[in-house]
Image (cartoon, rainbow, N blue to C red; front, side, top):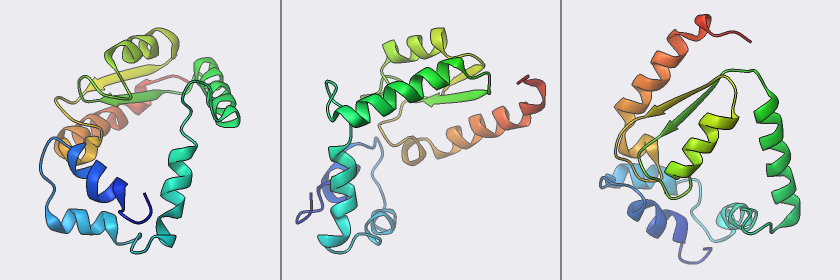
Length: 137
């Protein structure tokens, strides 16, 4: 993670469906030029709750989900087909449990929707925002 810049040099390129231009990869790398500057990436990865651990993060995520399911605030869920994190089953759960939810499938995409489907993502977000006045709080 720190020495080899795993997230940006390995994971990002393989988690997108289209090859990223060298300039795009450089833009991602620019804020993290040294192992020390990549420490927040490592810390963030260690906070991703898996099987309830770390417990504090898992608790915070459960509390956030509870607030989300109780909130009447309009929500937009963008997804790109079958994802690794946002699976088809999780989209079904979101549709069933989240009030005031609009779901938009923007087409075949990997983990990084803005990189794989920028025009489709922008169109779906723009359409949702353009109709914001029709949604009730």
